Length: 188
Image (cartoon, rainbow, N blue to C red):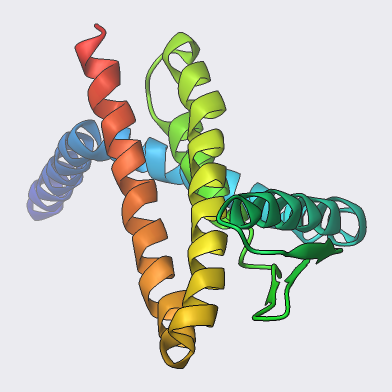
């Protein structure tokens, strides 16, 4: 008789643990699914940007494009800059757009968040098109302001480059995600 009671108690503990886990999963699974998909997409993103083809063909072309656009904008302000590969040159200052200065990671993280978020694709496509465009425009603004910082405030260039703009980019990328999420619920 003692063995039967022990088995019943053990079964009750298993059921209660099962019930607890089931309740926990039902409240947490949307977040866990989003987090898992987001993490998988970020891993795929990093695998993609670390391929030899990306590093030797796509990335140099992207940085050259950023340099050309940045140089054009700087020249609108009356400066005579030229571009050589990914470097914006002038007699006053030069800026080299290197890996990490290309907005790829904020764009990749933004797109992963949009793709992982649990709404229909009909609400995702606009964010997948406009989000990267807005972040690329922000990156051109960043490049231009860094050029002017290098000319007029050279002593704080590194602070603006590393400390200010990285934080601004993170905050604005997260803000763009939140604005899009809010928009998806408004349009329901």
